[in-house]
Image 1 (cartoon, rainbow, N blue to C red):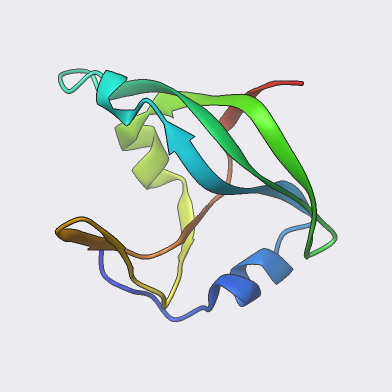
Image 2: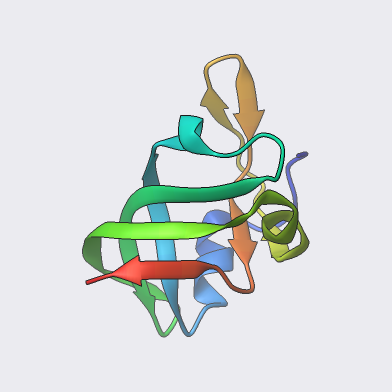
Length: 99
């Protein structure tokens, strides 16, 4: 995925209520055939376009193809994940469970 035009701050500012995910756990458990995934996650709540308090112990789930189709913004930042690089993305929706 190539870098987009919006900064992560601009992408956050465009969200009334949402979740900024900073950490995912268990990516190796995703089904490579169906694309289904259920991952532990942590992050920060977004309220009225600003990061607020930390969120831990949640699970995000879905399907990789649906995930890609739900992208509505791509960040201009590129982060290194080993030998791979990826920008921040903003999704229209994502299944989230937890307290």
